Image (tube, rainbow, N blue to C red):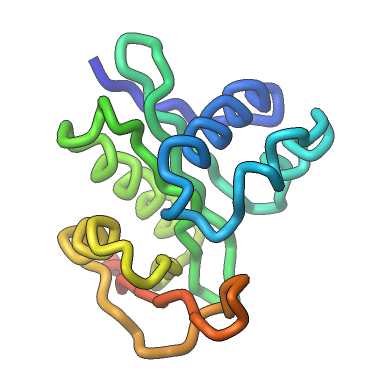
Length: 162
């Protein structure tokens, strides 16, 4: 049984477990590397969960953490989708879709008109997943990656207004 759990600052150990698992399982899917977070102290994990206006969700299967996603406030009425990950053994069950839906619901509830994300170029499975969830490439340049020349691919999904 899949359940989603909204994370609070008290859930920092769970967030730490998920983040480290994501960076270990799919290092090429994230701009940040495991070494940058692996030795993070408790305060650093709290800080991520304490970002003003942010929303963090964990996916659990029979009580075991298997996925995560975050929503962050952006400029004006844009919200950002970040840190989406589902463990390799839990993929293909719709968990990623449920995580994105949870972030979309939060984004709408917080006044968002669109949900924006950045994905590493060449991560075709993630790009295809985001397209299936209604995201389109914007053509705008994303952040420069550590190689100094490659940029993230920016995608956006307009959110329906009631």
